[in-house]
Amino acid sequence: MPRPLAAFAVLAVLAASVAWAAGASRVAKPVVAVERPGSCVEATDVMRRDHMRFLTHQRDRTVHEGIRTKRHSLAGCVECHAAAKTGSVLGPEGFCQSCHAYAGVRLDCFECHAARPGGASAGSAR
Amino acid sequence: MSDPGRRAFLGTAAAALAGAAIAPGIRLVELAAARSPEEAASAKVRWGLLVDANRCASGCTACVTACRTENGLADTGRPRTDAQWIRIVDLRDPRTGREARAPVMCQHCAHPPCVDVCPTGASFKRADGIVLVDRHTCIGCRYCMMACPYKARSFVHENLADQKPDVPRGKGCVESCTLCVHRVDRGGTPACVEACAAAGHGAMLFGDLNDPESAIAKRLRELPARALRADLALDPGVRYAGV
Ligand code: SF4
Ligand code: SF4
Image 1 (tube, rainbow over the protein chains, first blue to last red):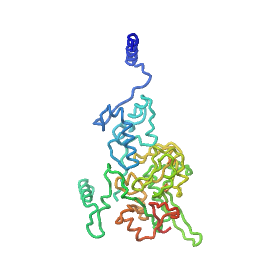
Image 2: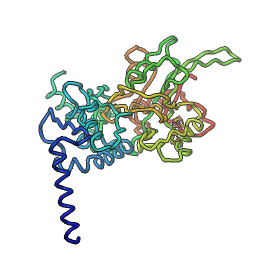
Image 3: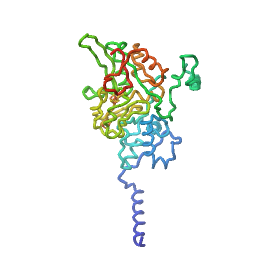
Image 4: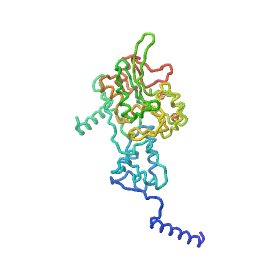
């Protein structure tokens, strides 16, 4: 990068961060409240990047093979991350929805899956 | 028996004895049939149902109600489009006038036409014989509904809310009886079977058709039972007596 251009880039970044600091962002920051703190199933940075990969992998194993381990199950996410107030991961302050709104990624898991925790139905032993 | 420690102990003891004959004709294998969560469904097992129409009590709809409750199939007041995973079918022989009734659900065919026609692979048969729709891949074309000779499948026409955590389902996909796969995977029995027993009729029996010692296999040896539309040779996992 030629010098003047590099200087310009630095300036642009500076300007952007000033705008950020002034709260000029048009998009509401996500609400990442973890009400049941503890250790997540993976490190936070890994989850941020790869939660969708874990979920897709788990979903195929569960639906097709009947493997129902809890570690990467969507129900497990909901179990820990549903907000105490609403009981859900959805809503403007919901753990899943607020971040997806911020990132501009459509969240369609919960058109079919329950967004609130619920006990497993018992089913007596055979 | 509510003491969890004692139950856990009995579970372990039963698991240790799994497959061992403790006396001729008596085995504890049924007690230990539950797989661990990390274990995949196995082709050694073939889940099936035996419906005895002679015990199906007139006027009773316990199985249908239990299915709806278990799977969260709400009544929208529009019965023409509401999902039906199980229904009571009334039969009448026009020649003799003999009447019978029995619940009909997905027959969990060994050679399922719904799987043959599915263009996406969404309709599939699990290793243990349970036929399911993977809603993640279903495009809602409804070919499978046309192909199923038992009219076992339903299309979800409307947005849904408050689904059961164990039974995800939604608009635009086809669905049918899952044999309560979420209960079966935990070592349970389907909700309809349990409700029928609780209502005192015991017209439905669930179990492993491949295990000659299972209650269902034994009963099938004693009772003349058949497949519905046996002429189609789909080898369904659901068998009927008295129809
Ligand atoms: S009964 Fe119908 S839906 Fe069920 S496996 Fe057979 S063809 Fe498929
Ligand atoms: S409706 Fe879904 S499951 Fe049925 S044939 Fe089409 S894609 Fe397959």
